[in-house]
Image (cartoon, rainbow, N blue to C red):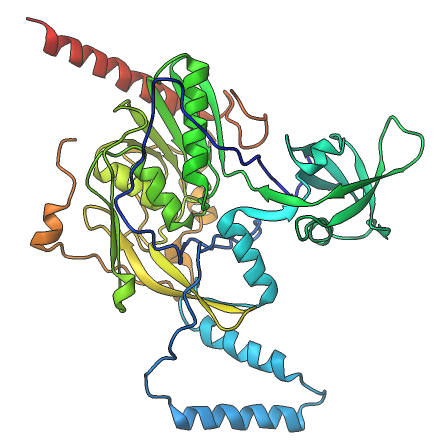
Length: 480
């Protein structure tokens, strides 16, 4: 399959659980929808962008005293560049570079967002954009349709897997990068776009006119592994991830013909996402207690989130798969389920991003992404630069020296200017809220599990073992 960015979508349909099994996942907290968890960029990898659901209001300006002498120095440097630099310098570019330089001195997750970056962030926040509904890749310099997604404009227009897009609105595609082609295909919902298609069965190219619509990006994939045992993979945490997961769980129960005996929740290589998504997924499997809390310098950054009374699995065992690519929102879920002893965490140590970002608009088109708080698991752990240590450490089934694995695994602690760990000392009030001590397969692609997935196979074995042990324990307790 061709590599590179893709316009990946899924249908956005309401979900109801099977008859007789109503669910009401009550989240007893107020969403801090302007928080963002987990924008990270690994060298040589694709960009995993995560976003905030809402931006902070422009509001009053900061009241801190301004360093006037330093500002005069800045103005002098600005003026000298404008007057003496060998080429004419653009004012806006100079100011933007100065802002980026200022933020680059902070932690690696604080940054300036120009108009394009801000738009991309807003797309990732909601998981929605105006587009066609196709997954695409590059082949021989042209854009190849990997698959049209069901119930999208592309599917209704008759696009097929293998179609080659050679022109977009009369603009030749040959030589364009995939990012550029995807940008051309995206646009305001309701607007039309004309694609020129070359299809293997046709002798000559033909045009297809498609009206753009709101497309929802899929963040949840699921399948049955064996009768009774389900698999859910979350690739990122978006505004609708909790609803999508509930829908997936309902479909698994329907396929299974009843309640699941156990679930594998795969968070490997999940870079994070919105705080509400992480809290919602955690809440879906917890019946009470603290999920996560945040602490920062300003009042609005101090928040806590608690679980409601419903558990989608009715207490059935869970194994959560994690690795060094599981960051931020993924670590919130793993930490909450681990602290509550609700799931077995399996895999390798997670990335270790324990900070929260707030999106602060500068104007209508630009914003700051600023680290404003740390988050803590229910037991008071800060995973900043530490990560979540699995209950069962299991490396991928490859035979290689441990040192090689360590060299390739980039963690939060490896990033320049990363925040230091600052574990909270629980107060008496906090202690009262701590958890008690005892407590249809989707498309076959790179994200779908197979028998070749060593970690998944071992996780399934553990899950079945826990299920058998639980059944025997329950049976012995009932015996006279």
